[in-house]
Structure formats: C-alpha cells, structure tokens
Length: 250
View 1: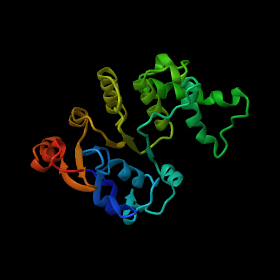
View 2 (view 1 turned 180 degrees about the vertical axis):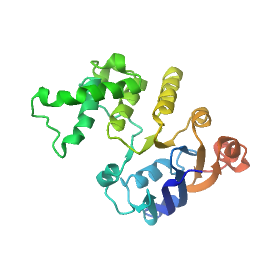
View 3 (view 1 turned 30 degrees about the horizontal axis):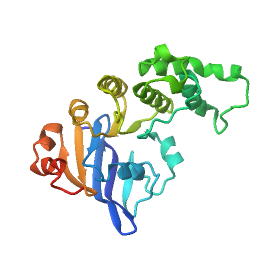
View 4 (view 1 turned 90 degrees about the vertical axis):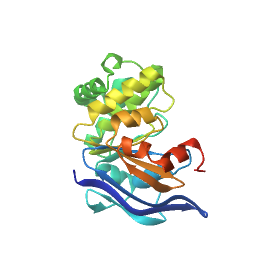
C-alpha cells in the first residue's frame, strides 16, 4: 500500500452548537483516487473546506505529506501542492480558454500577475497552456471564450487551470454535478488521464462515477465516518444502504 499523503485525526467543525464534521479520521494514500460520499448535509463539502483551510477546525489535526497544516493559511496550503476545485465552475467568462490557463501559469512570475504588461511578455506561457488544454480535451477550444463553452467543458477548463498550479494532490468538489451524461463521461475520462503522478480526493454524488474511478471510498453521514473501503465493500454495507435510502437523517 502507498504511504499516506493526507490524513486527519478527530477533525471536527461546529457552527453555533451544530456539529457539521464530527471526529473524522481520514487517511488518503498517495497515488490513489479517494472519494467522500454521503447524503446531502453529511459534511462532505465542510470537510473539504477544512482540508484546504477555507474553514478552521474546532478540534482535530490535519497533516499533508507529514506536515501539520492545521493552522496553515489557504494560500500556503496551495503552495505545498494541495489544490482544490469548487462545485461552481470558476473561469473568466470573457477570456479565451488559452488566457484562462495562462493566468494560472503566470504564478511562476511571483506575486505579480502582469496584467498591465505587454502581451509579448506572457506568450512564453502559451505552449504550456496549449498542452494543458490538450490534456483536458480542449485543444479545439483554445480561442473560444470560456463563457461560450458547455458546462462540462467549463469544468474541464477549470481543471486545466488547476493543473497549471502543478498540484501534487487535487481536491475535486462534485466534478460532475449538473452535467449531461455525455459531459459526465468526458470528465470521468479526464480524471483518469490526469491521475498519473497525482493523488485525487473527490466529493461526488454520482455513485456510478465513484464505482468506476475510486480506489477507496469514505462514507459520511451526520458529519461522521459511517463506512470506508472499496466500492464493493461500502455498497454492501447495510448502514450505507440505509443512509442513502433516507432512513438515516443526514
């Protein structure tokens, strides 16, 4: 088994007496695709926000590559190689796909994003931007404004901009939410392509996606870990079946 790259111990988040995440122990092995699943309100996105430091835990600890990041700021977590996407696609709608990716690549120039400089200065990033767009199946859409892309292709563009940050671990928050069947298939194929050399942790409602992609699945309900294992193990667990059928109030 691969070594752990991300782990939590007793991770807890309370909101004025409501416990959204309750004592979660999570262990994500390097090089795997790991899913967080569960009914609505189970605490999945809150857990993501804790891992990427958009929220601070009430209790518990988070380690990434053996380093305690419990009190680390979000930007510093990203610099360590832990990068996330969001449920809502975040792209610059009025910029072409190439420029969306190029903006992410400009990180290499340091704190300045050079918006006021000549276009010539930034063309050094064009080739890498094209490569990333090709990686996510958008080579035909280099010059198309992001706002003109289909929803599924916008998500692919967002993943390309995320990959431009060269993440060692990628957190995908509901990557197929709201997609047509065709777009779901496209994004699943994309995740398979980009997994080489990376670890992926994803929140996903579509169980057929989870079944086909994920090595390990952690099931949350009421903010707690209900079950963990491969798809065959968790799908046969009576408590998991009960939670998804609604007899558990998550």
